[in-house]
Structure formats: C-alpha cells, structure tokens
Length: 151
Ligand code: FES
Image (cartoon, rainbow, N blue to C red; front, side):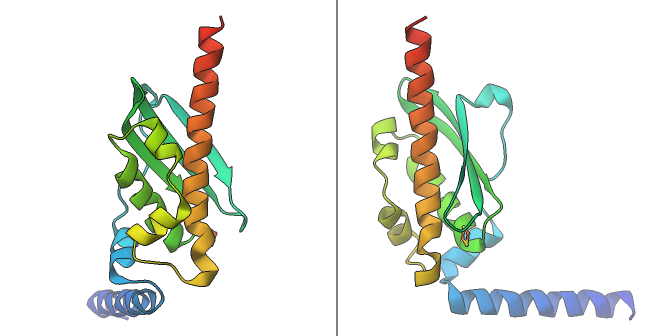
C-alpha cells in the first residue's frame, strides 16, 4: 500500500475509533482521552508525595502531588487503565490543583463523574479509582508529615 494511502487508512481508522468512543462516552470525555490534562510523572523536586493504587478492575493509577502549606500546588497522574480512567484522572487533577488537602480528600467519585458528564454503568468504578488514589496519596502525605514531626 502506498504511504499516502496508508496515512489515509490510519486517519479513517482513528476517526472510526473516535466515533465509537463518542457513542460510549460523551464528547468531553473523548477530548480528555485524546488530550489528557496533567499527565505524566514530574521531576522528583516537584513531588511531595506519590501513590499508586490498584482498582477493582485490576488497573492502576498513580498520583503525584506537590504540596505547600496544605495546598496542592501541582498534581499529575498516570494510569494503565481505560479511557474513562484517563478522563477521570485528568478531571480530578483539574478539580484539586490549587485547592486545600481537605477539599481534595473529600472529593467523591460522584463529583468527578458529574464533572465529566457521567460514565456508563460498567465504568463508574473508574471515577472511584481516581478519587481513591488521590485520597490515599493525601493520607500517605499526612502520615509522612506526622513521622517527620515526631523525629
Ligand atoms: Fe479499569 Fe477503567 S480503570 S476499566
């Protein structure tokens, strides 16, 4: 197959995949899947705490938080999970950046799901994975802080 035909074929396949995703998820979720926010592991100087968590489906997520004076200054994530998880993780980072630890640890899966416009029943646990990973990272940070104080 000539190269320009191959490019066209790849383009058509990608378009079909996007159309399938839009049927399953809404347009906003598909945009986050294609262009995740705050994706990737930052430099160690930008991490106060990180935590990896395995969800009920066996997929994992990691959150990296830079915290100063009880405020989340920077937040990144990665996941090996599905598209819904990428969207839920992205949305979670946008919702908690610049916010207090108290606000972030109280963020519920429903809040995340609502913010992305809903998830199919078989993917509701993906928002749970994002909320739980974030909460566990904050718990770890608080524990580390207590340990530092007691030394
Ligand atoms: Fe496993 Fe979404 S995180 S299916």
